[in-house]
Length: 309
Image (cartoon, rainbow, N blue to C red; front, side):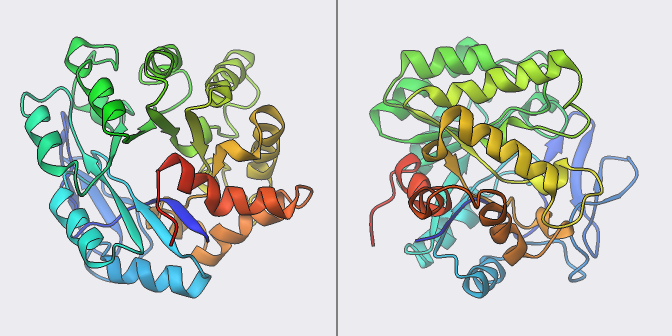
C-alpha cells in the first residue's frame, strides 16, 4: 500500500496573514494582500483550486492508494471541504483539521471536527503559517497546553510544519518537550525539517537541522519527505541534493521513521506526481525492499493510525 502522507485539497484559497488575505488569481498565481502575485501552482487551469477528484486521478495514475489531507494557514480553514472528501472516499483519504490554538474558539473547533479529522496540522512557519498571523507566538504558550493531552487521550496525530531552519518557528526544543511529556502522542514533522541547498554550508544551520532530525529517534516522532524538490534550487528531476538529505536521515534515524509525501498540488511546479513518487526509490536504491515499502506506506499507516484494508 502506497500512502501520500502530505497532500492538500481546497475549493479556493482562503488563507489570511497579518499582511493580508491570500487570494487565488488565475492559472496558478496567488497574491497575499497587496504584495506582488507569485506562481504558487502549476498553470493547469484558470481557477486556483485543488478538488479531490483531481488528486484521486493523480493517485490512480501513479498507483497511490491513500492520501493524508493536511491543511495550513496559507490555504485557510478547509475543515468542511476536507471532511466531506473523507466521508465520500473513506478508503482513499484521511483528513487533518485546521486549528488555530491561539484563537478563543479553538476548543470548540477541536470538538466539532475530531471525529472526522483525527489529525491536527499546525503550520507555524513565520512566513506562511500561524506565526505570520500571531506575532511572538510559541508552541510553548499556555493557550496550546490543553491540546496535547486531549490529542494524546484521543490517539490523534500532531503534524508540524516548523518553518525555515533558524527561524523563530523552528522550535525543536519545544517539540522535544511535547513529545517527551506526551509519549503516546504521535508527531510528524513535515518536509524533512526543511533542508535547503542554501542552508547546507553554514555550520550553525546544519547543526540546527540535525538537531531537529534527531527528534525522530523518539518512538513517537516521524519525518515526512514532502516538498524536497522545492528545496534544491534549479536542480531537475530526480533532484540529487534531496537524495543526499534522505540518505543522511535514513542513516541517522532509520528508514522506519520516514514517510513519503508530495505536498501536492504546489509540487507540480517541480515535477509530475509520478516523478515525486519515483524520487524516493531512486535515491534509496541501496536499502531493502522492505524498508522502501515502509517509507512509501507502512510508516504512514503507523504514524497516522490507519486501519488496514
